[in-house]
Image 1 (cartoon, rainbow, N blue to C red):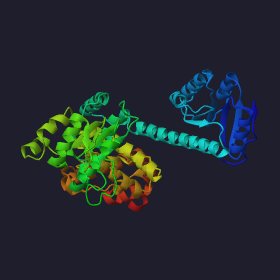
Image 2 (image 1 turned 180 degrees about the vertical axis):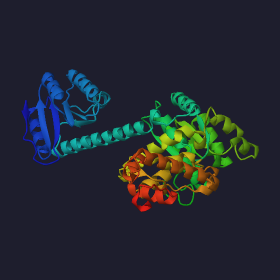
Image 3 (image 1 turned 45 degrees about the horizontal axis):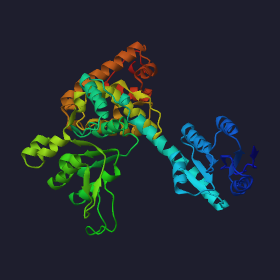
Length: 462
């Protein structure tokens, strides 16, 4: 076993080479001395020991036409280390030989004799490939965590039933239609379905049909050929092609025109379409999740939505209730949003003050989860203490009867009762009471003055 002198640069990579002839050992050493530590072994046992003992960024295996055991070693190595790129070197350049090497796990194939430049290029490509694959797997892993059904806040029995249904739907390829008000979580839950399905490693493409002008939507969905219309200076791949093998989420499907509905119906029925201006039929394997906040039955009656398309997308219907119908979910949702906002904004806020949480729970949230998220993010930006205070929560009271002028008075009474109880339990020491309430002494002093609370033992009252 021989090892060349390791590089002294900060970006040093490690390479393990198997069964290389003496002259090619010299070639590898000369070509990669600048940034790669090369370890060369001559027998399978030493090769396996090295793999078990050390981490390698790239593996090189030399294969000859008369030794099939090298192919077996290649396949075994790829199975044990699927994320490490393997470069095969050989004196033969027969096509079937190269194909067999690729099928058994080779990332690249170099035919002897090879130049130092060819070695450098192959190794650099392999290292770049590994880095890209690691990044993709990391992002997919994060997606799996983000879209984990176990992280969905479901405290009401009805919503728990919905989540259980979605878990079952994720195991199928059937089309799903989600209905519900804006901001109820349709986009998030569509991602949960995809990343918990067998298509999770394939693309998840989201498109909001309402945000794209009618004249551009067809091209956005199905793509177009060069010269198919003014401004089409090159071919464009549409979202359905991009989603091939995976899932496409069509948000606000009730906004699309009857003409595009016809083309969409064909995609659902035949899994095929043509690009705008093209005549080549493109086949796709996709799972469709559609969503709308419109009443599609009414749209059908008005002639604005095709009845046959409705039946085609309504295979697995699911209705998401507004947040006001999930009262038990509001507090845990708010706390989840608080943690996310604090992480994003790099602020340390541990919780909501009791009064702030009472205000959040009393509001009916017409904008649903999206409005709650935005409200809490703004509160985190404004808040200077370690608890969210009522002053940091901006709620448009005129939008809801729950926080109307008439309903504000009970909240004030409740807030005063909370403060009086905390003061009494703290022997009327304001600093202790503030700590019990989770607010700053300054905030408590402000509220005491505002609510007209007094005590005979306080010096200012003597």
